[in-house]
Amino acid sequence: MRRYGKNPDEDDIRVRPNPKGNRPRTHTRPKHEDAQEGMVLTVDRGRLTCLVDDRTVMAMKARELGRKAAVVGDRVSLVGDLSGDKDTLARIVRISTRTSVLRRTADDDDPFERVVVANADQLAIVTALADPEPRPRMIDRCLVAAYDGGLTPLLVLTKSDLASADKLLEAYTPLGVPYIVTSREELENGNAADRVRELLYDRVTAFVGHSGVGKTTLVNALVPKDRRRTTGVVNAVTGRGRHTTTSALALPLPDDRGWVVDTPGVRSFGLHHVDPSRVINAFPDLEPGTENCPRGCTHDGQEPECALDAWVADGHADPARLDSLRRLLATRERREGD
Image (cartoon, rainbow, N blue to C red; front, side, top):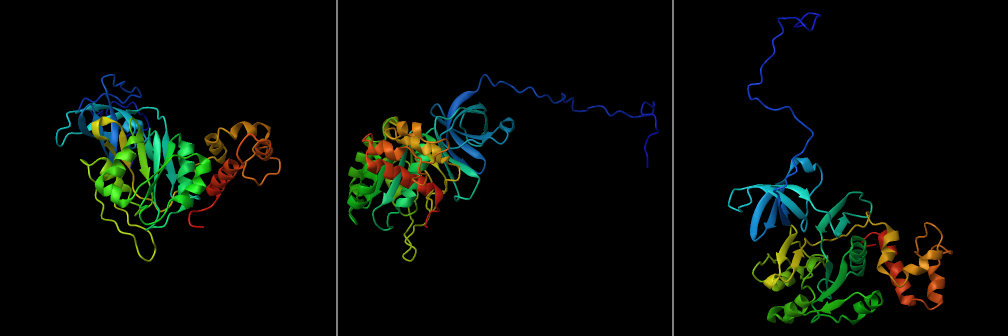
């Protein structure tokens, strides 16, 4: 049934007043000039714990940010209740430009990337020498993600009391990756934490590693006042550990000499988001040799016109470095566990 006649200007049309007196919506957004700067420490189901000055503040993302998400390590601007008191909530209204990004996908054929940590300076790749056995392909994948995201890699080898590190280090010495070897005894007496901590000072370091390698145990030794649960065991059948860390968390080193970001243990590290052409940036001794490569060259050794072979043959770089580059490029093209 038609409520009114054909004439929309009839006098009997009732116009309801606006009882709330709301202003019409506008596309002009507030500038939030009074917003305070903070750092995201952890994210849990839409709630973000942030450090503002010396206070821990609970916040949520403002609607005006749209789909842009804040992650651990992000520098953000907050408004609202910044007291840090119980049951208070602030709003994140800006996310600063990131200096580095550690990203991964669930698998190599997964187009959806996930940002794990933002603004980290260093990526500590934690690997056990035994129980569970080391997985070089996982290390390679983490190296590719570090180089792609602008992080400096650091190889941390644990459980040296169970196996020697010599064989594994032979594969990574040509890459020039700094490393440190620790044992369970050193972790217990604090010597390992002291040695590792020296490599972390004045930096933001993200820790990654598959389950069971002792990553969170090491983090607890580095930051003893903020211990995380470490009850995971290595499955005797699969040789893999159980996740004990379920969310990334940024923790300050003693005397505020830097930050440690403990991330959940991973069983795979997809690299679908990585452009293989960017991996060469981590090899400054090889990068000049690519000037004579054909356009779109992948440098993976499958293209006969790749100029890197001649560059190395002329003595400009160590052949082992070219082998390492191509090993990492091949890592991008195969799935973990193959």
